[in-house]
Length: 351
Image (cartoon, rainbow, N blue to C red; front, side):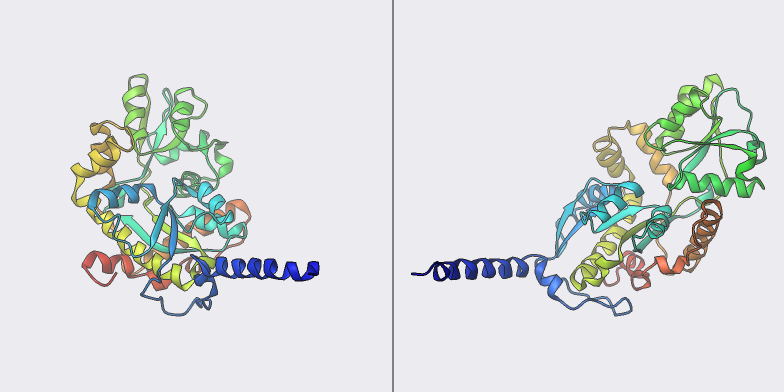
């Protein structure tokens, strides 16, 4: 038998295997027609759909509330948080949904990674429940924002704390030339340590670091002041290309609804949240957990994103001016088809 005849079955099997592989799992979704950006969101999720989600706190909230196994699609949870990690995972095609503040969507777009915000959460009474306070180093006198003139301020470009510093300077009528910005990563306890060592005079610190900084260095003169600005945005965002997949677009819709219910559950079950997340998952003390729960206050998940988009535009304008990047239209960062999904879920509407 000629060698070519022997090869025919092998080639046929390889072709069949390739076709079968394309049809399995996400292959069926890829074969579907691309969902237009202005097409209605599909409401049913096809069997075999999977999302990779980087939203660790919501994962725990869903576990505690009993919703973790109720999705109609498969979920792979990624231990990813923050803008840089999320954007890196997006570029590696290793993530479908990320949970961040307002800055990552802007920087992703500026660096050629088209993304869309699909959910937005804020804090009711945000000025009394700030995400960050300005930490003041021992021996430094800063009582008002005007006192920032001439000070060394920790600055993390591309992150929420960096944008907050620029907003605070603008609020005080100051520019970058009126202070010294010291670029430092705003991770872990870098900022509190930089304050304690007088590497910087001022740094935006958040979460449990606010409580711990004043407890540890208060006797030496370390303190904090509130900046008086809103710093409460929290978003879910995805790559624009992901929303072209109708199966994933539908699954994301279902996840946004669950995410909103989880946020409400956390607020309504503080003791379970403190014990299950802050103590068991994060290794904090119950006192630290209670402080953080009280600091977060009540979530606000609006059905109308108009005000949020307007505030996002102000952030874009400030960052564009300071970085030299082009001004973006904030509305272009949002997929308005998801605008009411979270609010409807909390009201008991369709999910």
